[in-house]
Image 1: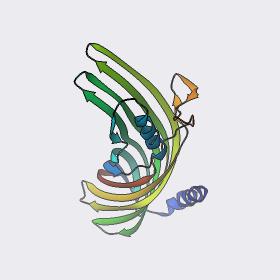
Image 2: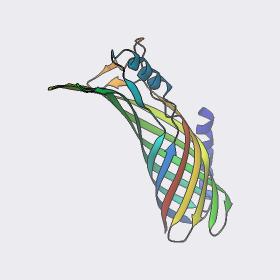
Image 3: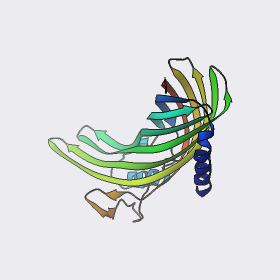
Length: 233
């Protein structure tokens, strides 16, 4: 990750060497693969000790994410800032004639980042970019356990959070239709996040059955489609 920071610094210094500015607002929907090994293992352990024949019906699957990007394109180089949202979750459940029991978790991530695009193929209507990204992340995790037996009902929810950082690289292919820019991208993101802690007391960590702290990991591939609106400056 240190080498990636040096590359970013060099590219930003060289940025004024390129020409006319074009301001771009872009919205993207992407599909991402996620690691989340630790939290998946915790869910598997928990499913074995519920005391009921519960089943895992969701285990932090790959899912859709959304990105809003604001940037300035100057000939071959684009400097962009973006906000990114993604989510996934898990579910353990059991139901019979007398009631139901379940554990549902929701994991959400909110990201603010910087993206550097370098155009290595440029024409009037088509461009190809090398994409480099750095970002900071806030992870929000909720743990909900519920039980319903006949007329009795109980529901408890606990909230945890953590911070993280990501570095990534990829390729972006854009079609400039004058008033709109349609793009598709593929990239890989390497994520590091701190351990989850209880929102009411940051000294209390979310721990597995072996009493080890649990973290989340958004490392994986991203494939995105986006629509941009350009404004000449």
